[in-house]
Image (cartoon, rainbow, N blue to C red; front, side, top):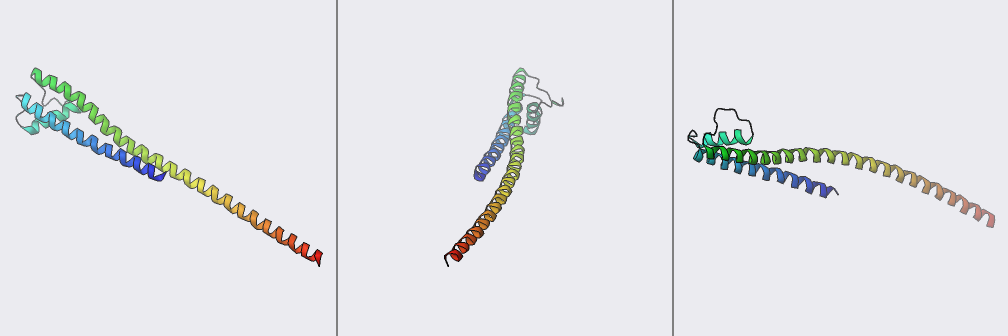
Length: 146
């Protein structure tokens, strides 16, 4: 069962890395797209900045798409950005939730282990008491036969 949780956490962490990689690819795509489509975007760095602010829906206003193609591309970037940034956020949240659930499960397992150990102690005491009674009974039978 412990191995299953570790595998789940590993898969969730992989999902985070895949989401981040997808985010980087989309930002690069957006930066190049704005660099090609918008005349005010002189450098690739400006294109990346515009792609990020558009995808994150921040929109500082320092750069805005001015051409029709740039505006359509910006709408696409908003949709892609919201989707991918939501994936990254969900992956991070899943890691935190999984860790919290794992801690709760471990605490519950420790409690069950304590209860089982107490029951085993009680059973051992009962076995000792039964052994003592059996020894007494056998000793009494030996005395009667003598």
